[in-house]
Image 1 (cartoon, rainbow, N blue to C red):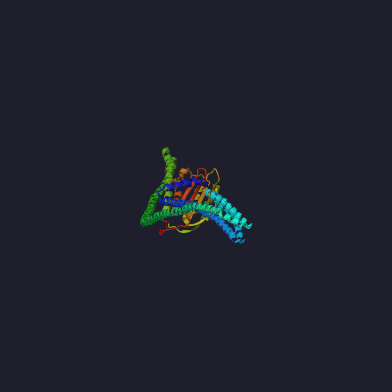
Image 2: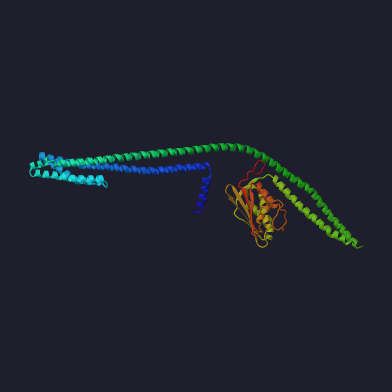
Length: 508
């Protein structure tokens, strides 16, 4: 899996270097995604900053509220003290005691809210000191009143010390409130500014994303329009091309028919003089025999010239033998050409075929050759398909016969025929042998007309494989060979699963 990474990166690099619409769309989408990611990150940061500002605002409000709570608690205690002095009712003392008990807690909360804030800590210390002094002053006056020293208690009140302490408390609270108010205004401004900036960033980013999206839509629309135009042009070209193909196919069909007729006529016309040559050769042979008998009779009467005897008994039979061999070879060639011509004119008839059974029948037809060469014949895994029976029988028969003919005497031969389905509606038939093998340079040559390869110690004119390839191509298939000298050969036939014919009975 890791080995595919460099190849993937290389392909991606080539894609980025190509000036195509796909690259432009990809880069725009990448820019939009990157921008969206940056917006999300900046929005997260700004939200955190705004939240921090809001926390600071809340803390400032809490600190102001705690300071005012301390002041209000002292004023409640002072009011209760004066009510007790004026009326002597102990209910006022209950309110005073509650305020005195609440004072440490309120001051502690104030110091806690002040935290590390220098202004808050200084104000908390000052308020704690003034609050303690004020409660000590009020407590002393209440003690005097409880002991019945009312006049002395009133004198303490009239001395103005309590008023001074309250004024100091008010002043300290006002200073803290002023400072906190200024800070609160700044914090609120910061919070609002951060929120506005967040909105601006999101709006600008959204606008940019919309612009990029619009550009992508325009590019894709242009691509679709170009594609539609190209398809229309292709349809027009295809329409003209179809007519051209039909016209050229008709011309090729006519030319092929003319070639086949020409081959038939030429072969037929060649056969006529060939028959004459073969006939006169037979007459020459009879004449030679007659002359030989005459010479035999003459030898009994007188001596015959030795050159005459050599000419009649050696030179003439040798010449006749050469003529007969040549005419027989020419006859086989003419028959092969006629066979090719007739095969090209024959209409194909598709039917479902079992190649395994056909291969067995072909092997049975040459059973004596299989036994003579000690060749093992095997039909392996096989498939069925639809094609022309006669053509397939001739193809399989030719290849099996060749596999037997070119067996290697140095080792046992084995022929195996097998077949399987291929993707896309095709089948492959393989015919493998352990024969002589074929040199790589001759893999194409063996399919040419009148061409052979290797040692020429077997009879043949080099027509079998040419006929096979012509028949395979006519069925819409292909043939290839895999072979090495001394290692046997494997012929691979590839055919369509279903043979489709045109009106003329040939493959489309």
